[in-house]
Length: 270
Image (cartoon, rainbow, N blue to C red; front, side, top):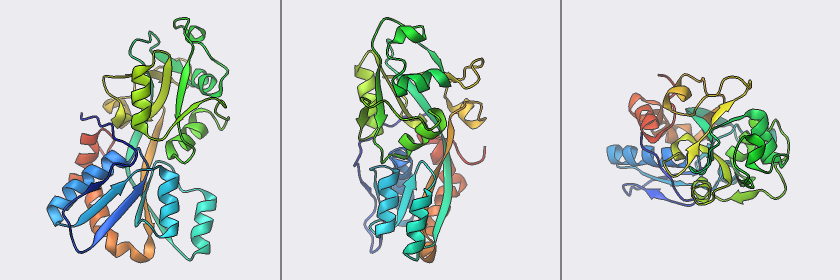
């Protein structure tokens, strides 16, 4: 399975055309959308530009009219939907894939598993040393995405149960930056989409019941035994749907879903 680490503002423009479509948002969805755009562009000759920045950034751009499709690793918030209604925009939500959110550490770290409660303790600042969770006497250095990130929002809601991150947490502008930082820091820990996991970091087995620990991988993501699974979305205006359906339908097609799997995420049906 191909693993990709991509920078925050990497842009992928395919096959110049008279009409260029723009996709913006989630850093998690970025590698998938780029690959889909690449293949779609080669097949159709249509230009598709893909830019990261975070789910919140993409949705804000959609509301402002500076992007045509927002990619997101979280559902649109109530206040964002309210702004759409105020602007007279009806928004379509399309689930394009699923992701297993992995908790990663430096490969030298002997800790191989954590409970949800332990993860919560680490990212809220209650657990500060690896020896508190069975590891070495080493300070824990947690890395997080920025607040505009859908991954930040999902992790806070689903794993931390809406408790606040520790005030001194190190916020990274892109998922690739978390992978790089964790790979270079012995006491580091972070969270990333499954497609970003590589040999430079170690993904931990996670348990939500304190008994069964599951590793994030292709198999456990597909059968949804891994406990931290989330959908990935495209959002666009209903009134302009005919412009985007060829691309969206390609992503949802068998060929497009095969790309989902190749990039490292989970197709809608398997």
